Image 1 (spheres, one colour):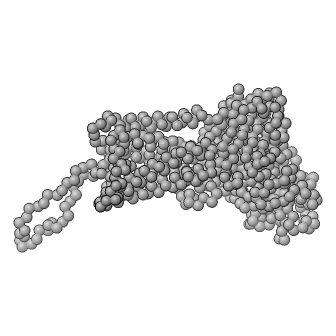
Image 2 (cartoon, rainbow, N blue to C red; image 1 turned 60 degrees about the horizontal axis):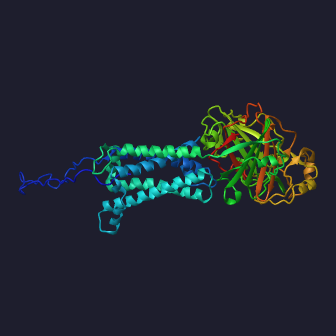
Length: 592
């Protein structure tokens, strides 16, 4: 943001006195040569240069990290064009911190121009020359003023909508935020072009040529220092406001544990104050991507119980069901080969606990196709979960069709990245870095075998078939293959071991074409640290309710003891595999 008025006086070349005569009968060689420009190079004051480049760094950092987040969205084509230059890794912290710095620097810049009597740079009076006969330079200066005000409006919009997104508001604000970012990106290009057209390379280089600030009557004695102080106040104020107003989940004390039935009618829940958490930018959810989560917690002796209630307009249980066609069995999916299913999947819910409130879910969310340089890329190209400091994030995942409706919540964790196995190193199976189940065993497995060539877009192998396919069809209820269809109350989209038999061609021949069977098998029992969580869930009138009980301290190395000061994040999955809602601002778990 520089002034397009030079700081030096206009110097006219003195006219040479000649008598029109020639020397030795020849014309003077330099008579028609253009006078040499001996004017000093244009410069900018130190304050302008410092604030300008600091703001440039903050804006570019904010834009690049924001583009990385934008590229993660479904069908994001424009942001993906910048993939080669987009940063990877834990960029949430960089994005939030740079955004706060942009806000502080805008205030500092405005204060500096006021205190240093430099407001003429952006004076709207310059625009009037566009309506008058004027030189090209004056018109360019006027256009540049218009561009400045567009930038101010875009940055203000980015800051406002960024705060709304951080607080969990999505929908139209995501689009407005993205559009404002594109305006700023366009401005950067236009800003350089306008200055070049105004004064060429010299005009661009003035931001590398400092000079002392010229004094004007009424100017503050120390405009830069005062402006930087104001920026620091805005910075500290914004951070303090954030940390000072974060939600607390107060853990109540109770005498008896609730019945785990997915209802909040137990007396113990009435004493537990709720906290409401807005989440956004998830897949599906009726196109809004938003879901508000109500959370409660109560301690009963050496046990702790949590209750979560969230918006989801449909009960989704059909996780990769199998359908028999003329050429064999097919697994219904849209992006299963990329581990990025958004159609034929179950509803899920995740809660994560960390001892730190670092952005990105305790610093465990790393964006980009290959955030770990020495490890395999993310199968879906979106990123990996892991920690870099040896810390652990305790993750509880409720999975509707994989035990969620049977009283189980899967105990998982984020930690140091594990070494890939041979298949993962070769890119043939999904590498999940530091996201892994706790030690032990779950009771669900998958009923399909993907083809190495066609993966899940051709025929698949089947592990087990229904002992009685008609009975199995009845247990699944009314079958509607629309991804958004609501599964019947009490319907069963999984198959128990005693309801099935190992695959055989003879048994397969008994089953008619068009038959649909579950893609999930329930076999055995949960065991080990993975079995620490018990739950109860129910969907009714567009809301899921989940109750979870666990020991306050399991004594397991892959669990965090429940204590005062833990931080919590929640995520809603509406029949999708990985595209859950985003919850940026952690909730503090507080014991009375």
